[in-house]
Length: 518
Image (cartoon, rainbow, N blue to C red):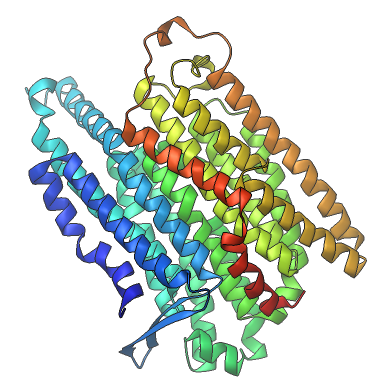
């Protein structure tokens, strides 16, 4: 089968106008099912070569200025690509009821503002029409498909400029989705998101340009073959590390993420936390560990400590949040810290566990964001103190949420256990082999961070689903299948991967051993 990866990347972009047209003419259901079917087809395209267990490459003519346009699916890229499209496919379904509700609410707010300032005479009932919702939902799904395309393109790229172009493409739709359909102060927060992420991207680009211009090529293969000149190596490594840690919202450069997650519509939160943040982690594996092994060894301990600080800070901040989405925002910061901690382990098992943590974090966090969306739809509040006893009213959501919580906590038989166990094993292995007291201390504090993770997750689950049911929630019902169906699929994936992790480990571990050898 030819052009497999090219189809998987560009079909969502080329057919995004179709999603827009379907939304306008046939409604939200048609746009949602079209986007779901398209992304499901693209997921199959990605999984097909990934199952072969070997690298799959496609190369196309581009421009002599930047090199060739290549796509690579190997032991590193396959898990990222599969999870990105699995999550995108299921979030496309989940988005339908949530975004219809949100788009209607945003339009009603605009009409009320016009009435208050005397700028219009329309009534809310006549203004918030089906045509308006369809128009907006079509635009949403068009942007959604472009964002999915950008994420996949970033992890399949074989060229620094290609990586940067796709990296920027995935950020632009997120900006518009936040600005159009977010919550309070959405435009200000969208500009905050734009500033932080694009400043990080520009710093990343400076590192890319310094490498490409000094080597004479932007292709990964040429850079690996010829090596990066020593006079630019350190500067390029620092630029890339800073650019990627901004994207991962690591401690110190994390300030934008809590504001963005609080203001974003829940499907965007799910897609961002479950897939987009992980692209930053992928960049570390591909650009630092693989292309700059010497600099990776030099910075590994610093990355390990930075990851630990991020784990602990994010977990402590999550403990004191009342807004459920802001709690998950700090949780995402903490989980990215786990991944950075594993990247800094400097061992094959630590790196393998770190990549598996991306998979388990994606599954667990998307389930929990879908839970938050279901509660917002059915209850109408984001305040945890106004919830309680919802397990009896929303049993499917409660069960799936518990599996998502166990995944983030690293409890068997979920995927989180195998990923955390492998990552910490690798970190301890390096500490013992190097005889490093600092690494032993970071290992021990990393285990303490897992206790903090359990604390805020269990505290959240208890307050939301157990205890006395408030009177104003007596009539609460389970969300519809657009919401519960994707949650059940993701919960099932987490358990299956937890029981049989070799689905991904068979590709990840050999690849990582080829990189670091231990």
